[in-house]
Image (cartoon, rainbow, N blue to C red; front, side):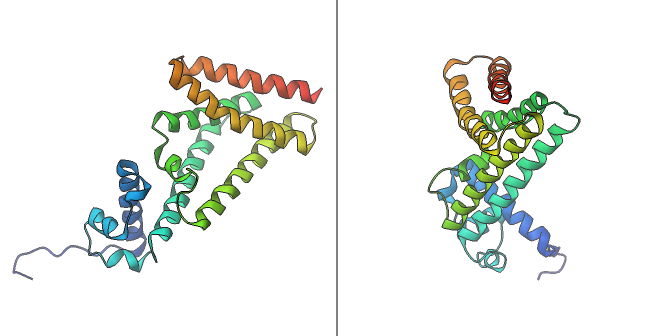
Length: 198
C-alpha cells in the first residue's frame, strides 16, 4: 500500500451483511428481481466479486435474506401504526394505510418479491406461510370483536385480503381520493362482519 494511503476499515460481519442486503435492495428496486446476480451484487456494493459468497451461498440465499428483511420492515411499520388503535375499524385503517403506502410506492421491493414464480421454491413456501399467517391474524382480530366461528373469520379475512388489490386497482384507474375509497372499503368490511356476527 502506498505511503499515506488510507486503509479502508473492515466492516463487522453484521454490517457487511446489512450493506449487501442494501445493495440487493437497490438492484431489485431499480432493475427488478431478474437483475440480481452475485457479481452484480458485488459491483453494487463496491467489493470484490468473491466476497458476497462469504455471506450468501448463492442468489437464492440473497433473495431469501431480502424477503426476511423486507417483511420485517413492513411488519414493524404496521406495528408502529397500530400503537394506540383500539377499535377494529381503527386497526383496519392503520393496516390498510401502510399497505396503500406500499402500493403508492410502486409495490416496493416486497411487492416485487411477492410476484408469483419469483425466486426459489423456499421463497414460494415463505410467501404461502406469510399469507396464511396474515389470514390468521385478521381472523383473530375479527373473532376478538365478534362472536363468529373460525371458519367465518378466516373467510372474511380472505375476502378482505382479496378485495384490497381491487381497491388499489380502482384507485389507479379512476384517481378517486384514497381516503374516501379506504373509508368505503373499511365500512363494507365492518358492515359485513356486523351482519355475520348477528
